[in-house]
Length: 154
Image (cartoon, rainbow, N blue to C red; front, side, top):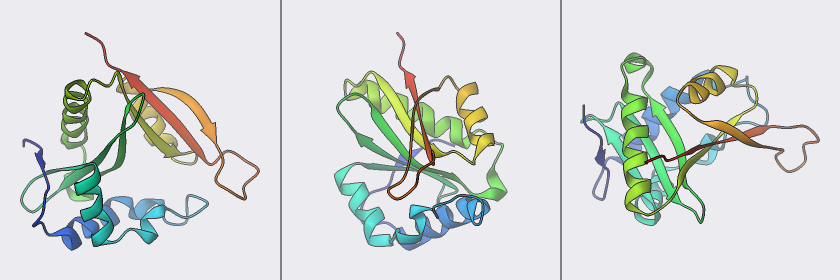
């Protein structure tokens, strides 16, 4: 399936429910708890206006948020419904992110993942991402988040 951009009017509550299903496995695994707990349909709509929201399917079975930054296109909330994982939807969305980064004149994709989510680290490294930073959330004296970057070639 081909990704398409989600814009108003859109079923933002359904998209939030998709993200919640996709991220449910993090519950009780990551510390501090996910920012997903404060995500609202209105915040997703704001992301679609200030950045981009891309989805696969109608209704959506996968999504990602894109936010241009000075040095890279930031990839956030990459989520695939558990019933549709392993079918290439995440790769298709990352391919769209690369296309968008090129169109915006940005040299790389960047994302963050929690330190506890080692399977995600492996997946992103297999997709050409390299860890570039390790940071801590406010109030933590240990690494909580890893930043990964994939330079665009060609």
